[in-house]
Image 1 (cartoon, rainbow, N blue to C red):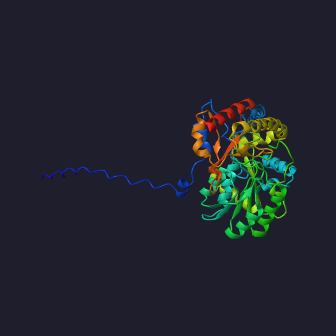
Image 2: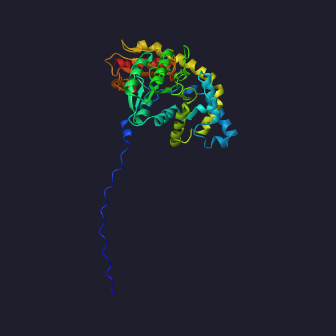
Image 3: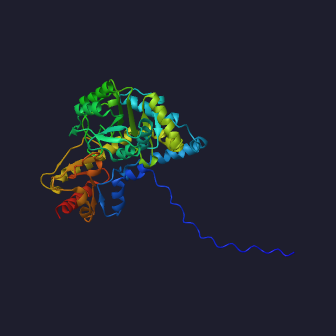
Length: 407
């Protein structure tokens, strides 16, 4: 018997592929950093760039860092190249605790969580403290990356009014009573972007509001050691009433090297443990070798920072001296006692975002002020970073800026 072969199957038309699932809404609702975008556009070497918040690379203590890497990798390579604890290397935590205590805030090593840059500290705090829809209070204007971190956490961000000295404690009190926020975020010393410093009496008042109303304070201090004049103002975290509700963030990026990506977080035990859990999910731990290198560099850090301060003070003064000739009549700015930035407000008719492309054609750049606002922006503002250029480059940059603004 002959069995008939089955007829060949008709060719199948490939089905159209299903659409790729969309990205999380928070990734599209929160934009990228305008500062990073500007740095990409102005990467040409001929551009004098006042836009970035980058420390001066020629002042990195390359010899000390190189010697520390050599010693760590020679003496303890198995430890340096191995996994570490989430909380951080004990020797570095102890050094940071001693340094914080020396600056007026009694701290034990167990109070410290080492982070991969202080920016990670912000993200960990947002994860540990915020539910989608929670309210966060911030300064006017506010550090850009903090707005990003809180926005990605799904927070509702509300700006607290202030003045040339910083946040108004009475306005903070009213907003806490009305909005019931989870936390207040502040950079009270040499703030980014304004360079202003919150006076001691206002710091005490902020601590009192937090204690009376029930509020977390996130106190970010990446610039505090860069003081060029005046007296150090104690941290908010050191004021009565703030002890059990303040997370203090610090960083080596501005005083040692940003490429090490080392920061730290000092917080009450329950919050610190919650941040450690969040960090385990993010990166397990900060690179061990970098932590051990930083610990070896700590004993010489004060002397190194003293040299940085002297150079930066001269650069700040050069920028301030040149602003009257570079800026249009009616412009105003603040004289910071430290930090990296000068905040400028041009006459109301100027829109610094719209002006930037024209200014960049003169091979100079700044950061427009608008992205630093959580609410309605002041479009006449801009930020200038003075630490990356020499006084001669600053003078030339201001000449170009004046041409760009007046063209």
